Image (cartoon, rainbow, N blue to C red):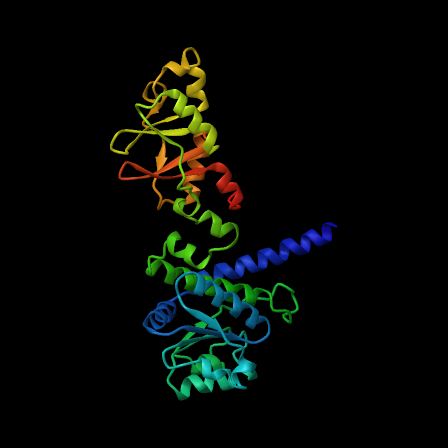
Length: 314
């Protein structure tokens, strides 16, 4: 068992050291690659064969989800018609550890024929891919983690990290925000965490006027099922909230009171455009179960913590 752990630790350390080399090797070519991508009116066409192809798919997905339109094109399929996907408006990002992958030949030739900007990523500076590329991103010399040099491990890790570096640099340049990210991630737990309050809130709110008797407030609390009711003034502004704690504090002679006499003033609220994650954090920190969504002091909806649970946020 210790031998297995020793192997695992050696592999991880080997790849971590390679990533340090990669970070130290970055130079003006990286900035040139960014400028090429920013200058393209089309997409980033990412391609690679074998293990590099798997990495290329991930890089294309990361680019696309962070504000840079991108698409993976399989080099073998490109030779059989998919070259039509690669246009003069695009920029190609081609990956190959050796830089001599034969399946890439037609794709490289296509970019040269139609003057499509080509960014090459490989470990051999004199390779065909990097000699043909407009921008050559050279992976530093680092041993594969397998020890024999035959299994793509360290090289694919470095390529993946370089792709992430490109994507994040582009994302920061575009000032890509969580709101933008949400547009491309509407599903799953991540999509739920990036949902807006307005996406989850209920417009049918428990509300009473400040002058309403508590008999009316209790009826609204019971009918709406949130365990609370908001209290508004005559202009429709939210001025308070009545919770079960307020009811307990005014149990003696409760039905003789007006809503304004029982409510807690200046309740915690949130804007409809705020992230639902922020609303959930507020409810958890305050140990409350509901928040009114308010715009211009007027209630727009109510969000219950169960809405966040149903959306898969926790």
